[in-house]
Length: 140
Image 1 (cartoon, rainbow, N blue to C red):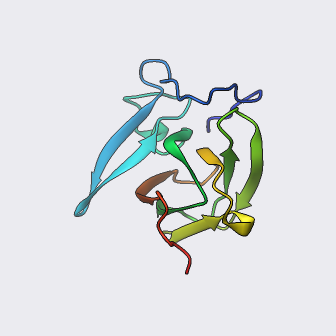
Image 2: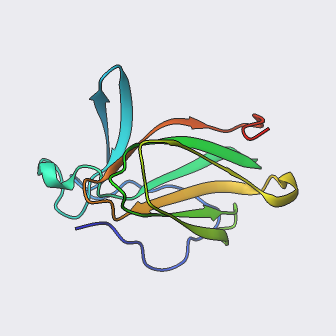
């Protein structure tokens, strides 16, 4: 069971916490801490780990972002990039997911990415690590 988000985002873009037991968690994996969402089954059900939505809002608009996916058992993720007014720039389907680094850059390096929404349908769920942004030349 995985999260889904209905309707359009509203401006100004903000992140709202999920209901108790249905939000985000930080989990220690090996030598790092990762961010994961709790899906519809909710905390403390271990089957909810990594099945929830992850939303990020940046203080300043970005032209590129990078992140590491932890988990990734050949499932899929939708990554929606949003402007500050809540309008969607693009929604990408990323598949098959693997435990790898992923990078995204706006055409023409236009800095209008105010937020990102990540939804997944990976068999084991996913977590996010090492989010990179803030004008870094991520992709050369």
